Image (cartoon, rainbow, N blue to C red; front, side, top):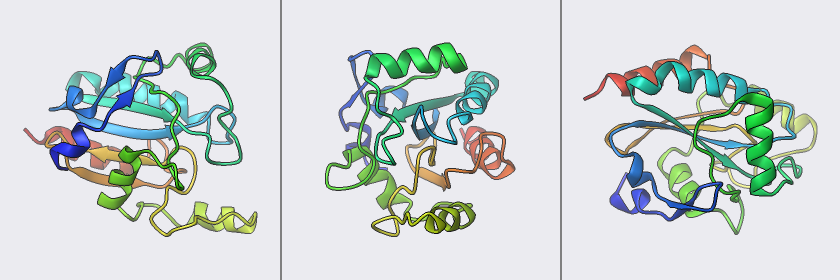
Length: 182
């Protein structure tokens, strides 16, 4: 991952400015999240993972997105309150962004370019296809709760399908492999 991705302007859910450069040296789990999705209970597992691996250098970063069936309609303040009250989320949340389409945030343009295919992709994609839902492009984020692992060195190390949960051995193996690196 070049310095350009580290310097992409981001906005925290409280309105303050941020970049991934502020998290340099940590392993990052970047997740596009939503409050009104069948996968929303994943917040609980993500928070548990954050608490279990934070001291080792893991940061979970949540990026609310309303791209999929308007499942994140709230304001930043409403999203922050929902996550805190319903799931006790303490990991960093960012301002709502777009993760697909013409208005795709530059962070997600860079992430999907670095890792065009998600591990564990297939079953969830097939389920969505049964509902007539298909990604516009093969490398597009498929749905809410897709996960990207960024190593301490800033490279996008792995990408996981939305239904790969925080306790999935494949995700944990990828995170632990990156945490083990100096």
